[in-house]
Length: 313
Ligand SMILES: Nc1ncnc2c1ncn2[C@@H]1O[C@H](COP(=O)(O)OP(=O)(O)OP(=O)(O)O)[C@@H](O)[C@H]1O
Image 1 (cartoon, rainbow, N blue to C red):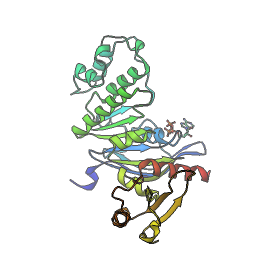
Image 2: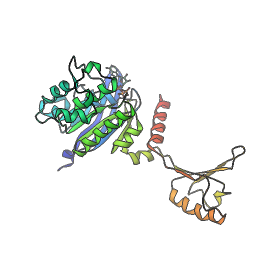
Image 3: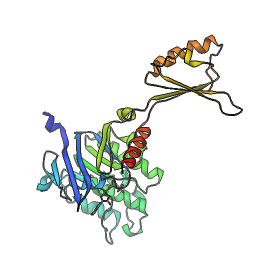
């Protein structure tokens, strides 16, 4: 298999203008076969516009786009059948029941997921005979997901699949993503929930103001914004004696009526700890009080990058 076959999405320099406003600007994005890729960003970042271009419902202003090896502009029927799309806003399902809707959309495909199996997968079994007009917002969202994936797509686009869902329904939507992963499908999901990206995605891209700010695995993204690991502790004097400047920056704060808190900001957490532990023992301290190690997380990186981007505007 060549590298190109292995890429289900290959986007270079994507730009989408609304008038003279660049909603998506010079975006590059590659998603490999079988990956779950999250497009993470705040409101108005350009996530939906990007997805709309990739699934062929919106034309682009510039850039090259290949989805399952085809340009979405061609919109070939055989290509569209390989995609599953759950848009943010779906149309009405008229006066039909849940079962009728799922069965109707399934009839467009040669090998749909059996209706009752899919209804159960999205947690709507008790509503199978209910009219769609009687569903709650969250139940309606589950039905949208069922409709989007009924044709066993090779590539699934989920635009904010869990916005408006209660915690249990969110978990069920996550299970569905994992189900498709097990089937070998590729998934692109847009979200502004960091925990969702952390729980589901192999890789994520952080997008703001139409620009892709960074792309990487969740662990890589934790390190992207240059945040150091923070080690903090209380009750040890003069820690800087064993932690030289090149290993980390030691700061001590003295909150009123509490023990001084020492914080070490470092890119060498293991080495710092290996020096701290014998030092603590020398001071008769076998359990270092208040010891915590905070590795930079996706949230740290996300907030830094988004704030940096906001400051530019
Ligand atoms: N049809 C349109 N005409 C003009 N501007 C638009 C249109 N659709 C979107 N925009 C603008 O383009 C920008 C990107 O919108 P988009 O919907 O892609 O963002 P998003 O990241 O999906 O946001 P959200 O998380 O709120 O759904 C926003 O500033 C939005 O106001």
